[in-house]
Image 1 (cartoon, one colour):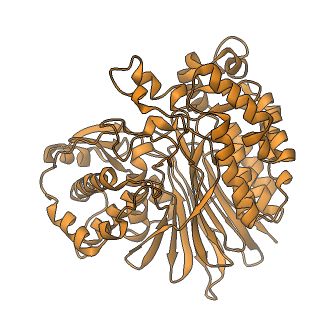
Image 2 (tube, one colour):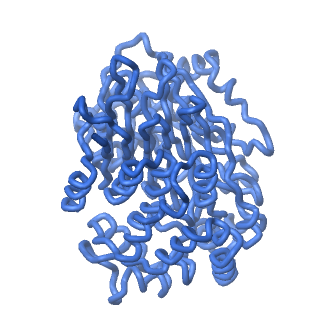
Image 3 (cartoon, one colour):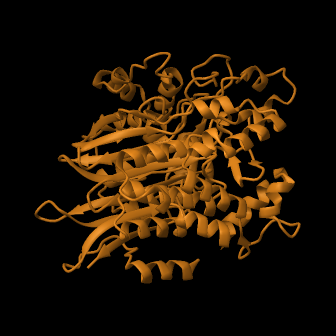
Length: 546
């Protein structure tokens, strides 16, 4: 892995530090992604004159290959873009809809195996990532479609040495893999080990077909038929009809002004708005001095997060069915009332019906020389999704319904046949004085809308550079009286939180990626402040041409 990073730097003149200020170089873009080979793929496209949208497709497709447990064309996600020509932020929704034959009664007691149905074949939703890449390319792409998959095909066909992290994830999931999936992930009759090459020849063939035939082969052609056949075999709700009906949708994003910074994220049907509830409640305390990661600060954050999740459970509606009163939720009177209700000395109790945090997702950010931005979160749901690989294609399919809430029946977070999936991602783009200031995001399941606000506070309130803002210890409210804390949080602070009344669980929160833009005195971009989470194995880089 170290040699790969060195070669990236040598080949593309990448600065993996925060800034580059040489007067004789023009900075042409930056990429932050969860794997070095994906970052390299994006930087290569930018170096060839591609824009952020072209590079994003190269990054996303490469992540499918080198981070196969986290995301891919069998998955879904949430994409935020900044169009430099129109000076406009847009939300592109790849999360799609639940299959038309979905029956969530099979995910509830007393149905036998109802818990297994929540994560297995019946939990598979229509994969929307590929249609979203197409929509983004049609709207904004510079390079030809068939030029964007070179990296994905190369690493799938030739293989790449797996890391210790990927070794661990394969070992965890290997027992659930079919003999077909094991032919790639355990060709010698055992799970691959660190340093072994993962060769995905069928996935390479799939990307070659997508490169030449476009996305129609996936949604209405040979690949679609293979998926439909596999779904019938494993008794899934997903069918050819769902694939044919899938489309990527452009939506207006949410905007919230936090202390002079216009923060944008995805609107419903993405469940990103709880992050803004956290921003809004924290804004009520802006006249106070709150020391970063003090027990007082972290207790306050944990309590405001409980309020944000009450809002999430009450107002997460499919816009096709019911309009959520987001403007009212984020109004000053409501935010003030929530802030006033927080007990600054003791934790409140709240029972949210959601699972503990998950890291089985990926985020990446791309910015080009024209100022276009892509901030994208993509996922398969759980680790390797449903763990169903479509025979002949190398594609793992998601298990998005695992993140629905099935009790009580009919609640807003239930999985409704044919309706939008309410994904919980939170890609962010921040505008300051009319110019893009930063873009970021993180995986982490239900911790995403807690991790992202903490990074924003670190950037704006505590004026940290991007890498420090991402790496700083985080907390996440998980269940009544429990706070999930980073292992690196000061033990004395953790002890003080315990004394306040919080039960503590330790671990790692998120794998965030982010880029901040640095402007010169003329208002032109002269550099980038980049960050890739130390909790993962990703890299951030800058490419410049003399």
